[in-house]
Each structure stands twice: as C-alpha cells, then as structure tokens.
Image (cartoon, rainbow, N blue to C red; front, side):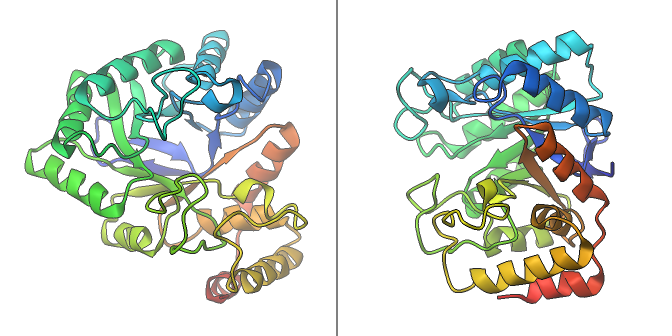
Length: 328
C-alpha cells in the first residue's frame, strides 16, 4: 500500500492509504459477513481510509440511513480497531423523516444539526473522535458563518479532527474557507466529489443533483486544487458504477457525448499494453496524477476489492499518462 498526508494541522493530519474504501452499502445491500470480509482484507492489504455517511443507505429501506455507520461500529468493536483506521463520515443530507430524502427534507448544516448529528455518528461508529467529517451537501437556509463556526467548535472540543466538504459549488467552498481563515478557525481541507477518467458535461443536470450545480469535479474544482496545494480531492464513483467494466451498459447521464469514445479508446489501449483491467488503469491514473486525488471505491465482493487493490501498484509510464490525458 502507498500513503499520502491529508490535512495541515500536525495535531489532526493523517497518513491515509491512496485507495479509500467506500462503505456506503455495507449493512444494507451488502450483508454483514461480506462487509466484514471486505473490511478485513482491505486492512490486511494496508488500507486505512474508510468512507461512510450518516444517511447511508436511507434509499434502500426508505428510512433515514445509519446502517453503514452502525456496521462499521460493530466491525470496529469485534476486531478491536483503534485510531489506526481513519473513518470519514458526512452529515447534512440525512432525511429528517422516513420516506423523505435529502432533496426535499435534509437535516441541513445548522450549528445545532452539526453538533447533534456528529454526536450520533460518534455513537454509531463507537469512536470518541471523528477523524474526518464532511459537510455532505449545501444548505442555503443557514449562513455559511454558522456552518463554519459549528464545525470549528467540534474540532476545538476534540470530537472532530479534519474537516471536509462534498458536492458544494467551488465558490461556496472558497467562501467558507475564507471565513474560517479570517476568524482563525479550521476550514475544509478535504474535498469529496465525483471524479473519474471520463469527463462529464458541465452544461446538463447531474445524475444525483438535478439542479446541475453540484456533483462532479469540473475544471473549476481541479483548477482550485492546483491553486491550493494543501487540499486533497477524494474522488467518489471513480469507476462510474461499472461503466468501464461493462461496456454494454448505457453511459451515465452527462457522460454520453463526443469526447467520451476517444477517451475510452485510449483507456482500453493502455489496459492492453499494461495487462491490467480498464478499472485498474482508471484508479492508477488518479493515484499517480499531478493532483492529490484519492479514489474512493466501494466493493461488494472480494473479487472487486482485489482488483481495486492491485491498481495501487500499477505504474503508468509518462507516455501512457500523456496519451490518456490528451485524449478528447
């Protein structure tokens, strides 16, 4: 396994594996035994960066979520896991009532919600401190200053380490970070967005956020990362829900455009040259790129996990990387 540092504060920064494990469906669609087996193997391979959220997976049973955090709590307890494993979670998008969703009835990002939801996440996970806590989605009903101060209070109290943000417009991320910096408070240092080798259109609504304003990491976000080298991008859905492994499946919304076939052709060409799978080339392209990107890949079977783990040791040549980058 390889590792990179996230965070700048010596007190809270962490060394995390360059491949993060997504636990979104653990405890719901992925049964407990399989989930435990995948977690055990990931840790055995040197992985130490696991991602979840307080609302995972509310859409499976029409509830409010919490199954993933609860399973991770049981796994930690049964395996005697301590703070050597970095578990990241999110708040803000948990439905306030069963049968609703984050679109029409989210918990939001008020100071009260941040404190209460973080406490519930700590209880479900069985931890005294949340290693990394994200603001999951935007909340336009609460002043950014209140959100910034709400997160900072938990860091000051020692119940949260690093702060992250997901699915926010870049200007709102910068504004929140500027507010934090001006007040001498900790700000967002880890950004989680959908990001893969294929490029989505930016002029059509996203699959998850139909208003089109959120979701995928576009050129503005990538430019922001270049300008702010202390930030890290955690890339969710790097394998685009099986798009690469199953060419017969329709492309996800926003990815079916004239720029996609040339990039798929380049990807398959490099996969043939390296003897790796297309999925492995995608992950290796992210891990070894110029920007600090940590792919966040879920796994519902040991075979999927093993394929992903093998990508960590796949080294692309400069020529192969240039070919991949230049395809359009």
